[in-house]
Length: 424
Image (cartoon, one colour):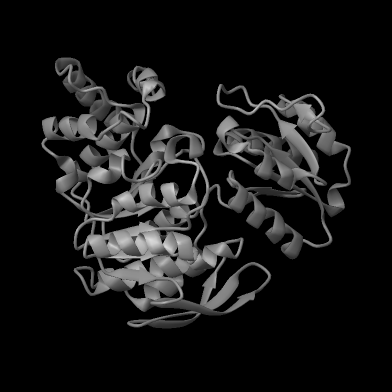
């Protein structure tokens, strides 16, 4: 798709500072568009880790329950159209272009609006969902929550997945500051579901829920996971809440934190079932979770050699990934191919890589972290060089893990394709 219109707004996004940013531009823009976000029901998801997976699972189950379901997520893996979907189909170039042109024309006529790139995309998504008369849309925040463009919706449920340190230059250095920003999505009298358990984080979520008179559904207080068992290609677990019991659920997603994300999904679905969405059955929940596959999340790109991609890009996510790989593949030699953005590459996170067999992939990206010459044994910036290095390794007992950022995904796919051809 021609990105010329979107590219016009990149400088707006770069110039925005959290201290002077408000939702005024997006609110005014949506008003010019006749407030499309008020024409459909929604679920709103914030959090540091797991919100994309949670959104995807909700979308799959709702659409297979017979509901026309919108999905707005970020970032994309290959094509920007991936961010805006209805019933798992990306918005077409023609429709996205039409909406972007309409939005751009409005902005050009009102000099009080200074929207960001994300404001423009969010407005296009809301127009699409409104025009298509979706039954419900799953809306993932881009960053934070309180001042996120998506925080213009009034959802059926607010969901806050696991919170950890991320985007500290924008959201704050302290976990309490980050949590408060995420809690900005909590609305008056709208129920909240959270997977968080840390007492410090929970005290803040509880405070915001109480302030907004929002019923709070908390992991390990309202809903529970029991009997988690790892099989060859899936987990089984039992789900229980005050209102719903589902034993022996199968989930083919890894690592194990996806089980908790699935429990959040089930809690939301059980609420929706008794609040306007009766078509959601236990049978559909079982069936869809058993076959769920999420592109770009612990995704197997190649089996010979074994190549996995995961978007872990902060300390907690990368730590979980590294530990899971040790547990699931104890006999495999692991080669990590990692790229990171500057704002993620703090000393604590970089310390996780010590002792790993690692290639640092230097992306051609202004945001990319540039390591010192002696920081990693191998620093490359060319797919073909990585292919040559990996071809010399013992592929029979080797696995390759691409991680650290969504922006390495296209290279991971390209390298996987080249290596698989070598082994045909």
